[in-house]
Image (cartoon, rainbow, N blue to C red; front, side):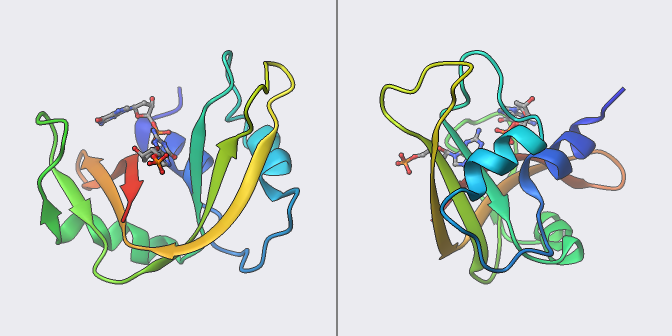
Length: 123
Ligand code: DGP
Ligand code: DGP
């Protein structure tokens, strides 16, 4: 069974990609099987080495808006791609806009080892 940590890798990690094209999100949301029903409204892929993303869990505690978990924010900006569902897009034709950004990312972490399990957002 897929753990939450594995799910985070599948849905959010793409370290070996640095430049993305306009079709990136439509390709990746399918390839990584992120598309559920209804279409997932927003999903972020991270283009940084896994160890750098895992390291976020070990420092950078920030308050969560949702009070029940500990949030951790990256100490530097990271290369990310924001995939955002286009207006009027209906499952199974989930059509995404692709936006490359450099932002601080916020994740929640769980377990031992304490690793990322949820992508909260970017600032
Ligand atoms: P805004 O950029 O203001 O439209 O907000 C987008 C919201 O989506 C914000 O709360 C962060 C969140 N978000 C971004 N990427 C992901 C993701 O991969 N998973 C989840 N669950 N939320 C995300
Ligand atoms: P996401 O990273 O948003 O694509 O979600 C990954 C999984 O984490 C998904 O099964 C939903 C779940 N999840 C959503 N919100 C939270 C949260 O606040 N904490 C944790 N640990 N998991 C969450």
